[in-house]
Amino acid sequence: MGELLSLGLVSFSAIFFVVDPFSVVAVFFAIKREHTAEERRVTALRACVAAGLVLAVFAIAGAWVFKLLGISLGAFKIAGGVVLLLLALDMIRTQPSRTRITQGEVEAGAGKEDIAIVPLAMPLLAGPGGIATAIVLMSRARGGPWWHAIPVLVAIALTAVASYVILAGATRTERVLGRTGLAILERAAGLLLVAIGIQFMLDGLGDSFAGRLFGQ
Image 1 (tube, rainbow, N blue to C red):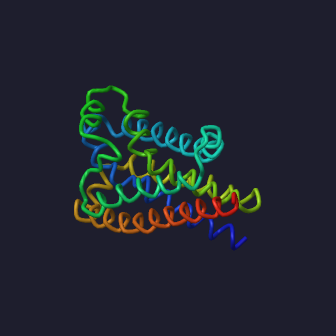
Image 2: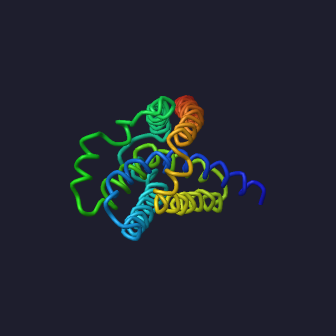
Image 3: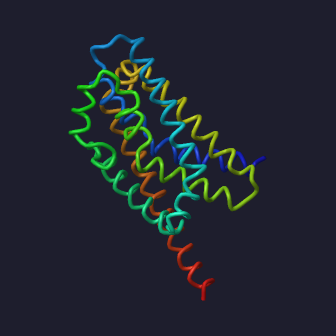
């Protein structure tokens, strides 16, 4: 039980800070500023459900897809670590991450009537970093008993719920935390992501070297 709780806590903290719904508040509020609170809540709900489903599907099927494509999990861990480092550096500098979404995509989203799926669910919430993190965490879980996958899926669900709460109350979130508070959270999350990204890269290098030695 303690092992499952530990795995769940690690998974939730990693996925939540990679998804980073606080960084999405400003974009979401700017695009939906003219809409009513109820309309914003509906959009946030659809986006968070969609993002959670995307992360869960990639977590479950991602490793099989890479196996079919001939991509080793070690190589993907290294690639995922690089993506997380790029995201983390932008978060520490509290600047919009082009790895997550470009200004052109933001402007295109502002012109759309429905932004729940694109760009809100993807790529703002379930972006490259979140997908990579979900796949790597699930690959670790598969190294143990089958029930180790449950905390990862629960962490994805909890992240989707927490993201909805934050985005549905975007106005309140922005007012309570303020720009300074959001910036502090952004930097703290960025620092954590640096460590996660480096760990992913070390794990990937370890898997690659172990695979070569075993192959020999």
